Picture 1: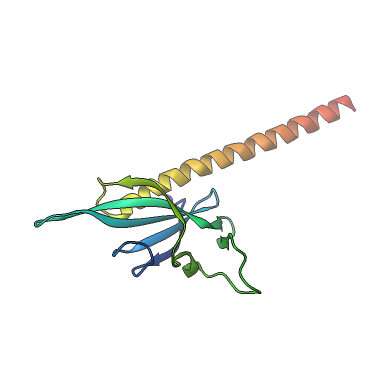
Picture 2 (picture 1 turned 180 degrees about the horizontal axis):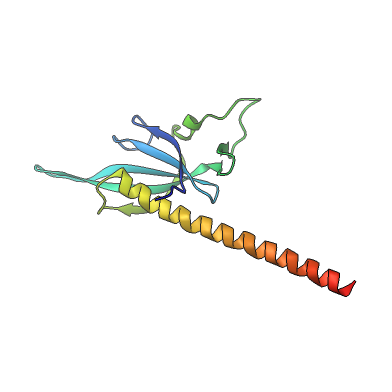
Length: 144
């Protein structure tokens, strides 16, 4: 399967309320998404994890140029490193919680399908714009 998501950063030690790794992804819509797990039930014989897909509200992502963009401007000429997405007190919005998944790979596949639909919509919009421009150019040539 072709990947439509770009891994920005992966962290085992994170500021999020999770003891497990967190993965940050850039998607074609310019947003930064993250996948992490958390415990929702702990029993004697088994612990249960849920996979959380969330949107990071403090960063955007330039998908074509593979560049992270903070919403707050950094001081001076400070470069923006990909690791900066994992910061204290992050502002995130939980989009979906899955309790039926068993790996990060399955969660990434769900996110990748979402990104694939985004790319299809973006490509369709580009084709429509090109068609509109060529139609208007043809009308101008016909009237001249």
